[in-house]
Image (cartoon, rainbow, N blue to C red; front, side):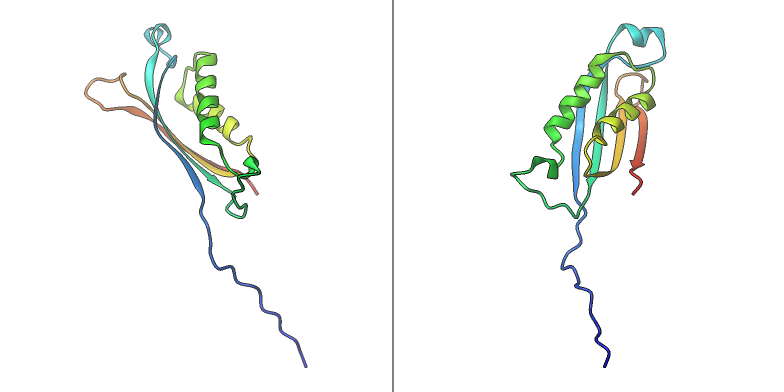
Length: 132
């Protein structure tokens, strides 16, 4: 007689994300000389996907992404130096966010709000996924 073991089915499948919406910072960014002299408004929209197998635990804050901490680090990196390209700034933000071991994917949208007349904004959107 052969014994068959059934895999235990999980009751739920999670997709856990942390979102930072419409963070607007005045930063030094751009290639042009006039952009290097005056800070400009940039809108940040960031979606951070985390390891859904890790259950959030209030006694273990490494089980979550602290959005306040992420915003403070983003603010700090934007104040450290002039960034010539939004793409470079995005890469610096990826580095900061991926320091957390539970982060699996990050989507960043950066928009300059005041640089081109007759537009609400211009910018970039980039996603990065951590290799398993």
